[in-house]
Length: 131
Ligand code: HEC
Image (cartoon, rainbow, N blue to C red; front, side, top):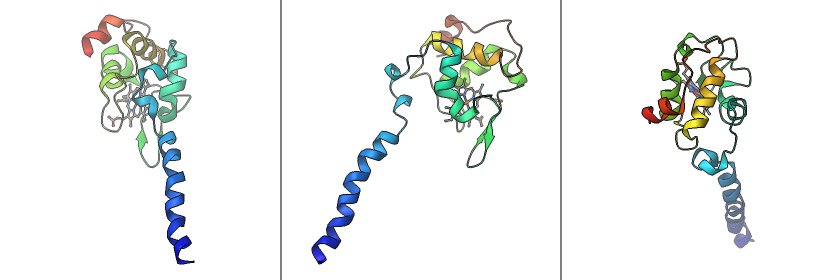
């Protein structure tokens, strides 16, 4: 009796570990996990989980700023820097996105969700320089 009471938490722990590992944000660390090449696809795969599918942001346990109607996106540099290197609670995504993917997703958010900034598009060169 005593023996099984001791064993139970150990068994639970053994099962819990792989689940916890699976649940982690493995894609944050593995560039190969992210195959999307279009801004829309990258946004849906990476950004929407925090900034919401329509860019509206969210607040609750943490605050995720709205990308919709966001005048800070007028110029590409700021969004490139934040995407590459992160800022406060936003993780840097330069490790999982290559230059072209960063440029694509930055241009996507600058031309969607009520943002109309097609001028001065982000380019692979700008992203490369900002790394
Ligand atoms: C894990 C959650 C998370 C993910 C994923 C995420 N962001 Fe963020 N993002 C944040 C948070 C939190 C902030 C606010 C950072 C701060 O307080 O300065 C932010 C801020 C930003 C800002 C600055 C907004 C402003 O008004 O200053 C931009 C631009 C941005 N994110 C773009 C992106 C893009 C593009 C992606 C996907 C490639 C992305 N984010 C993915 C959480 C996230």
